[in-house]
Every structure is written in C-alpha cells, then in structure tokens.
View 1 (cartoon, rainbow, N blue to C red):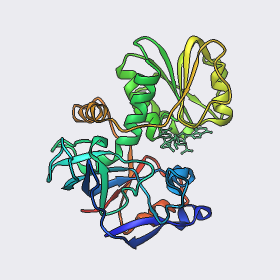
View 2: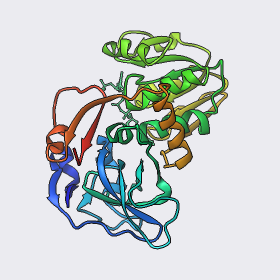
View 3: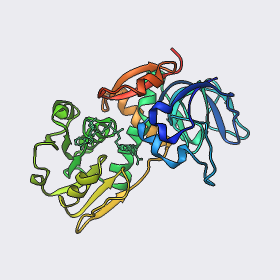
Length: 305
Ligand SMILES: NC(=O)c1ccc[n+]([C@@H]2O[C@H](COP(=O)([O-])OP(=O)(O)OC[C@H]3O[C@@H](n4cnc5c(N)ncnc54)[C@H](OP(=O)(O)O)[C@@H]3O)[C@@H](O)[C@H]2O)c1
C-alpha cells in the first residue's frame, strides 16, 4: 500500500516520503480500516512516539497521521462492536503506524461509527480538534454556563472547536489570535476578540477558564487572568505559570467513542462547523505539508476519491 513515512527526525516535514509499505494485519481487538481521509498535525514530528516505541526503541520508518475516516475492511481476533464494511472515524494510538496510508490497523475502541450523511473528509478533520476541545472544556475544565472562557488561537483547528463548544455550553467566549483571525473567531461564536499582537491581554479580567493552545509567554500571562477557583487548561505542555488561586491542567487528547459520537452529531445538526482548509490526495500530501505560505484551516488528505 502507499503510505507516508519519516525516518529522519532532523529533516522536519521535508523528510516525509511517499513509499510502498506492507498492508497492516489486525491484532487482537483491532480492525483494519481502508482509509478514505486522514489528518496530520505538524507537531507530530516533535513527539517521541513518532520515533520510538514504548520501550524507547527506534520504530522508524513510521507512518504519520493519527486521524482517519474510512471503512472497516478486516477484524482482528476477538474484535467486537464494529463490523466489516462499516464507516468509522477516530483517533489512533500515538505509538502505532498511522493514517497517512491506504490502510491502518486500529484498536476498535478508538473508533466510532461515522454516519452516512457525514463525508469522510469531514470525519477525518474532527478527531483531534473535536476531542481536544471536548476533553479540555468538559472533562478537565468542567466549564459551566455563564462562565468567562478565553479561547486562545480561536481561528485555529482546536481553538475554533473550543470556541463553538464553549458557546454551546453557555459560556461567554473571548477568542484570541492574530489580527487577521478576528472575523473568523467572531464567526465561530466568540463574543469578543483579543488581537495578541496589538491588544493588551491583561485587560481581560475575571476569567473562569483559559484554554491555551499557544503556550510560552501567552501561556504565562494567561495564568494571571484567572479568577479564584478558575482553571488554566493547556494542550501545549505543563504551564510555566499557574493561576494563584486556581487549577492548572495539561493533558494529551485520547480517543473516546462516546465523545466522538457527540462531536459528529453536533456537526450533523449544525452546532459545530468544521475548519477545513486544504484537501490533497495522498500523492500530493508531502507537497501540501511543505508549503511555506500560511494556510487557514486544517489540511485533510484523501487516500481515496
Ligand atoms: N495536547 C494535546 O492533546 C493536543 C491536541 C491538539 C493540539 N495540540 C497542540 O495545540 C497547538 C495548536 O494546535 P492547532 O491544530 O489548533 O493549531 P492551529 O490550527 O495552527 O491553531 C493555532 C492558532 O493559534 C494562532 N497562534 C499561534 N501562536 C500565536 C501567537 N503567538 N499570537 C497569536 N496567534 C497565535 C495560530 O495563528 P498562526 O497560524 O498565524 O500561527 C492559529 O490560528 C499545537 O501545538 C498542537 O500540537 C495538543
């Protein structure tokens, strides 16, 4: 099968190669998915799990990508809950060969059914951004109606989901980003926008929850905006500063079938809008990930038309 692999950590996205690899075999409790569409985030190239296995042994050449939508083509020994021919989508294990390929072996529990009226491209765009927003706001942040939420990077993949979901949950959302992102953030439902390059973030006060997708100086300054009892949720590593009288949480997203189903239902009924930018074929994927100009929205790779 065709797959995109990396072998050289120093090369960045320039080291991505389209090669022929053996089709994966399903292990116990796995399914093999014929991939129709998949997603990839550039930061994967920095994650240890892309390069080594759980015992820290070299696992290259590793197939990139951890989001997929496709059709189940085989079941492993003892696999229940999914069937051959079923449309599915989900988030795959960080340490296994991934989804920028024609087939991927995935634990069945990491997948959810993809309804017939949801396109594979849409399905592949949802797992990381949707689950990260859900887990940060609902599971870790426990956001409540009426609370004030800062959604950093509100026009980005995760931030746009955070903005929409927080609005649906009844929060007052202050989106942030660059000047060019203002309208997009407001269109996703943010009530206010802070341009991080020119506005004073410190003017925003009494915040119950900051959802940080940027980190660094922005993360540090954000801790001071949180009121007593509030929470700083980070998806970019442990916060360098913590709220004086609140909680700081950092986490890595996990797959969850029930949450995937909640997310896709919201896309079907219009409560959540996806943020898809470029759609490329597997043959063009390496070039798509190596463009130098800034691209809006998520890149989705179609492994099949
Ligand atoms: N821990 C986890 O489980 C988890 C899950 C998902 C994502 N993440 C991480 O979260 C981060 C964001 O992911 P994403 O997919 O949402 O990325 P993205 O689509 O690029 O969104 C980030 C947004 O923030 C903006 N931004 C970044 N730095 C900024 C700054 N200094 N000032 C103003 N705006 C800034 C970006 O604008 P520009 O495009 O102009 O820079 C973009 O609009 C990544 O580091 C990713 O690895 C972690």
